[in-house]
Image 1 (cartoon, helix red, strand yellow):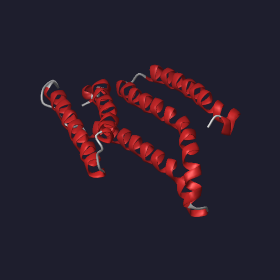
Image 2 (image 1 turned 30 degrees about the horizontal axis):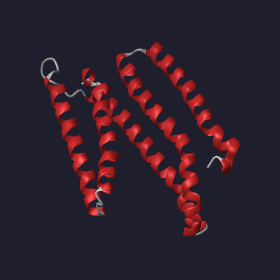
Image 3 (image 1 turned 180 degrees about the horizontal axis):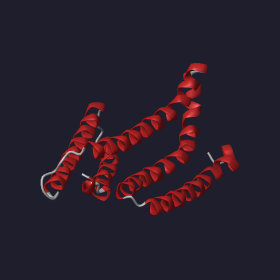
Image 4 (image 1 turned 45 degrees about the vertical axis):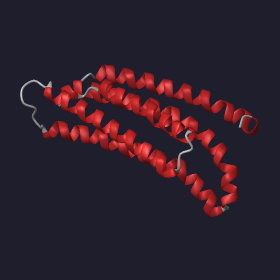
Length: 182
């Protein structure tokens, strides 16, 4: 199964989904769609993506040399990586909503309307880092599986510098210009 760790193929399907989901929502809104139609469009696009992932997985398993074996050690390694990736995404989603919940509970719904837009702009600083970190962890998993410790260390250092500079560049207008920038 280590030979099947081809993140470029899965990334292509993910890119297709990243384009189709907002495009489908845009076309649905332009057509005057109701909430039920927008949900149907979303579900249909997700079904298409699941089919693409299933076809990709079947092709990879068919192309594996000999009979594919389920090695528990490799499955644990992949489950560990997948588990950390999933928990990272869930924590990110929750963290982006906790401040809004606090505003509602400590203030009011009216306060939330004044807070939501600036908070969404400020959250873009985290969105950039999350995308870069996801890219790095996919690459890091492949490097770790191949035992390339020196390359893994070099990639980690490069990603850390990239994240630092991108975060500073995205946060600087918010910190320096504040309300005028928003």
